[in-house]
Length: 199
Image (cartoon, rainbow, N blue to C red):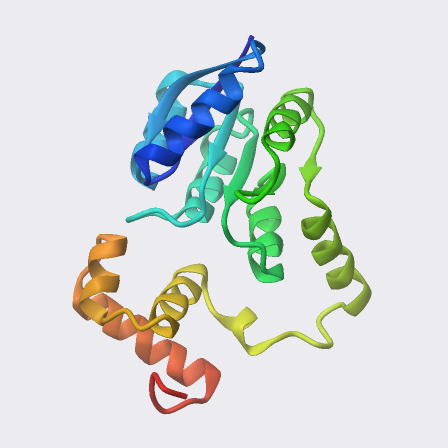
């Protein structure tokens, strides 16, 4: 039986994922977390065979969890399961130490297969994630986009700003202060060479 830690900030999503994994009769979810800090603590305490982590969580995001786990418990492989399929997320997840990358749009069988393969010591990438990595290798850094200069948290704040969230809404979403969001926003404007949210 493969033991799994499941981390996603939406309870209904976790319940659905648990059902998909445990219906395989080869996987048992032994721990759940709704935020990054709890995910890391649960991984350290429960020592699951595989950790399935969402990127977008309040407080410490999924990539920070992967980075920390790579340092403190490298024997627990991490599968990123997220709604983001953009190239920069795939690249950053693999660079942080993730052994696999699956989007929430993937078929349930892909999630089960990914957990099994990672548990067996392999890697698992969806077709789109594989293409993103291949393109990066082919291009190198020649065509690096401006958004790739952003940190993961800056990228997350940018996405929230782009869909019209206020600084207060963003602060609440990531469990940080409004002042911290202001700082991220200022860095984003500077790095992207733009003057305001509309641009």
